[in-house]
Length: 293
Image (cartoon, rainbow, N blue to C red; front, top):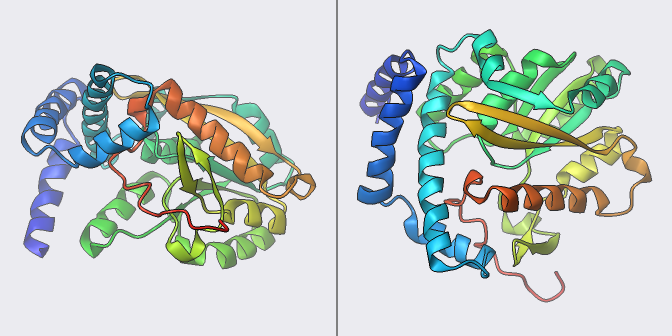
């Protein structure tokens, strides 16, 4: 496994130095193999799409499937590009709208939780955001099962923004410490399937009963953290815009599950607007709702 990892890392470092037109040409070749040869998680993707959009015809579903594979292939190569891209070049390719209310919240001394989904290039988003906001930024991450590739991803995340991740299991204690030391923004991709023991909030999402973590809401209320949402949308090859929406600056005044529901509806709206942009190959609906949930 170590040999495979070092071979991959060598090739990835070479690929990262390709000009963007060549990079996307290679991504196009990879897309063909992913879609038609490997057929990567095709059954899972199709099942998810059909259940999420029962109103769409088979031809529409197949079109989204093809767009999804293309989008996923480009994101993979874009993430590799983080190894060598200059910060100023990244900011030319990843812009934000609605940035000022978020920046103003941080300037006033209130730390922030930024909720996102696995839409667009979330890795680029976190790196770019760390360059434009007046506070230290952190991404809450779950370590990959393979220690070698986890170390590689961490090296990409930390290249431009050093020490910018927090392991998921250390979130609460780390945010408490940071609150005493500095103003921060903290990025949560809160759309993953919770473990069965933490599937304590169910709602309708994309036409299906779906469990969500409520940890973001609990953290916001316990630590007086403002909550924002960023809709990441591709605007071209290797180009994105993050539309920033405020959920609340006063979490203590919100009703129970209000923050969680606001996040879920904003995410659902973003996915419906650009269906191929979300991570459909994830087994999001592997848990079954039981009576009482």
